[in-house]
Image 1 (cartoon, one colour):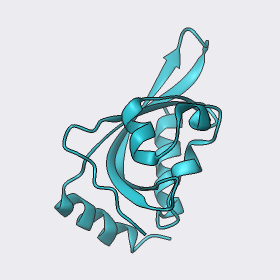
Image 2 (image 1 turned 45 degrees about the horizontal axis):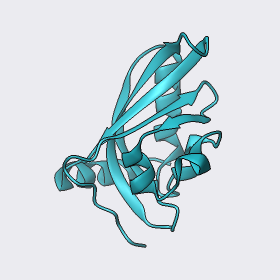
Image 3 (image 1 turned 180 degrees about the horizontal axis):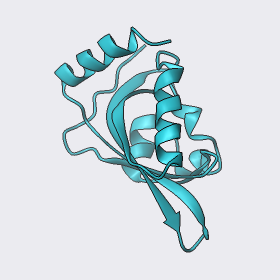
Image 4 (image 1 turned 90 degrees about the horizontal axis):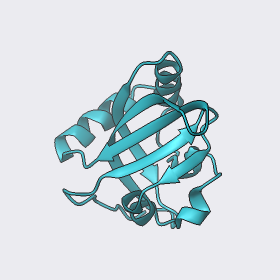
Length: 127
């Protein structure tokens, strides 16, 4: 598997509905994940979920944001071609007044090698 290492100025943004379906993805997210915007919109955000990520991490994420709180953490995602990339993600619950529904905005940046190593060590202890 080939790793894509984010550039220092990459800033990946996506918005999902309350069920996790992608409503929006910015150019950086599309570029890094290897999908066109058309391929992503309407699909579940877990289209980029890497099998190495523990289910407990996403359980914590969803419990946190469904309670109206901001979640942040490290995520290993999968690219369209089967590669992977690491991000430091912050997920914000927000009410979309245009859609008149609860949505979630995820902003992601490049983590340091040390941050990735710490996340891998933690995730190896989870199921």
